[in-house]
Amino acid sequence: MIGVNGEAKVLIMRYLRLIIFILTIGMAPTLVSAYGLIDESESNMAFIAMMSAGNTAAKVKQITKVPSVGVLSLNVPYLFGGNTAAEYQISASRNAGGIKRLRSALSANPVTRSALEQHGIPINLIAGVRVSSNGSLRVYVLH
Image (cartoon, rainbow, N blue to C red; front, side, top):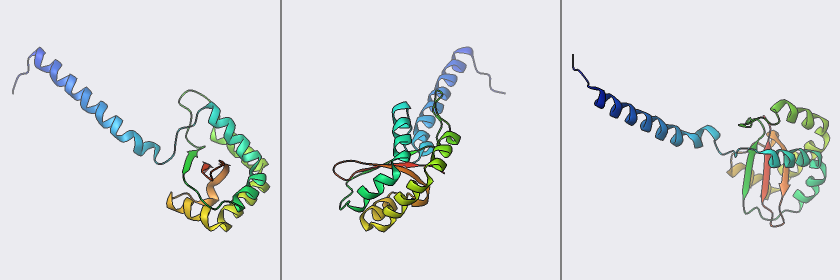
């Protein structure tokens, strides 16, 4: 059996930790997928987007260009506390009528439908949308 002295063990452990760290950082984007992480401010905006989904449907009908789409999953938990997917589900059920109108408007507008398809976002999972003045969309997805 090959013996390893104390100094070699320390070097091996340092390299192993470094390799694990690099692999973890490298995998982080795949763990989050195309969805961004949500913080308290975005959480509040998500609730507002769900509550105003019916009004947003009217804006969506008039969109002629979507320069960018940002996606936030409401199923990804906060790193440090915050709202849970169940709380978002409650809000979505309370605002189901508006969300249904929003989804219909997103589907009916070929520009928004195409932009969402290009980003792999199923319209039936959208709980809310914020529309910026240039037509960019911030989409809140709830599975």
